[in-house]
Image (tube, rainbow, N blue to C red; front, side, top):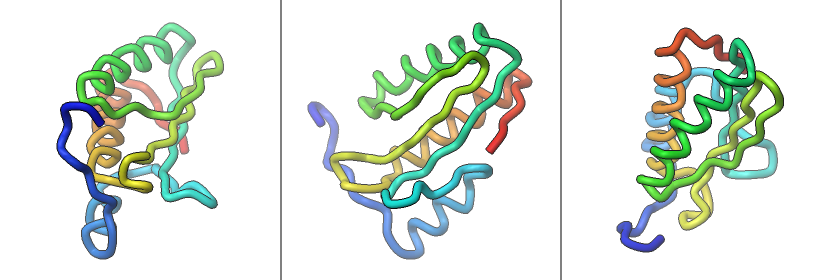
Length: 109
């Protein structure tokens, strides 16, 4: 990643400790990644959430894999440069949870 220090893959106890902080995130089968579905009141709230996250992701140079259908946002997080989960994924997941919950959104696995 340009301008960012090297990032390493989370392993062992460090990984377990980081992931236990995240609620509602699931391991993605066949990948070293986590995923979650956020459900909002309507499309405008879902897209607004994505816009806010996109700005933060761009600033951090760490981008989610995601899709939006009406009021639902499906997210997958992994760090391609680390070939798996990193602290960047944990931080972005926590930020997404905070922003989804802060605005009174319901979060659904």
